[in-house]
Length: 76
Image 1: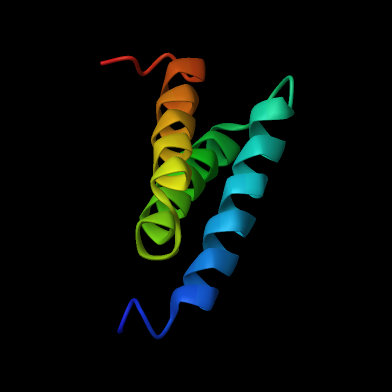
Image 2: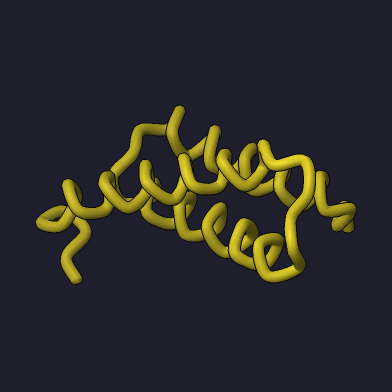
């Protein structure tokens, strides 16, 4: 995959996964499966921002990944 050619697709996935992660973070209770999905979504969003985002998007993606792990008590 050529990241430059597929930048709009990367941006679409990055934004979708970012928003889906927020939806899961906002839930007062999640199943273990939803926790796993939230982790994967945050990491996937961050990866796609690397190909389609600006430094600010990448930084916010890094923050979201750390937030997900902190909320789940996975601070190591």
